[in-house]
Image (cartoon, rainbow, N blue to C red; front, side, top):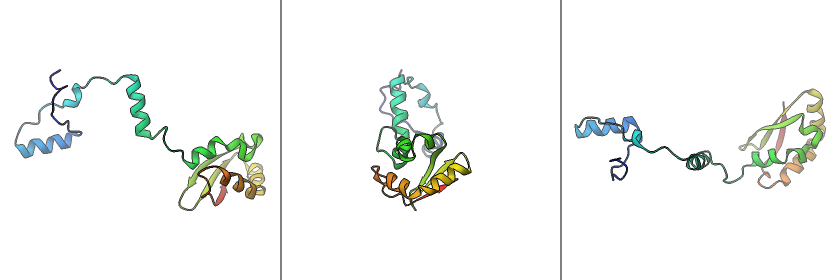
Length: 131
């Protein structure tokens, strides 16, 4: 392939190529990105992991989710789950299967907060909201 070893900087979007061709008063030409070799499965997985930020720093949400059965107990962990964490105000939203579970979690709210704050990176959790 003639383009493979070329020093030509590949433009990433059609608009960039169009703008350059208009500026230089040259025809648009073909899209060189269509001439690339397909990625191997390994390269594809690594690229996806890096784009998604996988395998990097652990978020408080990940830590809470992984330790959820330890925080609420095995029985309750089947009936509720952490939904989202608002990092601005430190509120952890918890989805419950119904009213009785919501009430049981409300009774043990202080203990749950203490357990959550003991987890690395979760000390900023200030409150729990159940839905």
